[in-house]
Length: 114
Image (cartoon, rainbow, N blue to C red; front, top):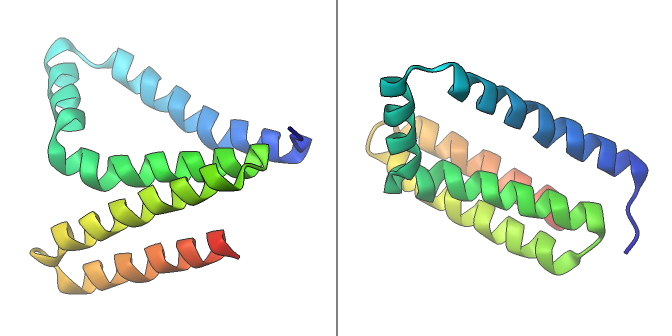
């Protein structure tokens, strides 16, 4: 397993700083806000849209970091699945934004495949 030092630094910055900020913000919330945020994170809508996209991006980045192509492909598949669910979810509200999400997800997948 060959880990590139530059990729490791980018991985730590890209995933460490946002994780630290989210945990810090969560710990500063009062009990009612924590319960509300936790219920939002447990909702099916969040899990199938944002959750799958974030998990897919994490796996794809982890696969790139460790040079494991299978993990990268699995991450891109999760990302694509989350993007499709996001498009369906957004289509009811705003068709222009859903097409924008489609273009963004397709471009990320295209860059990930290349």
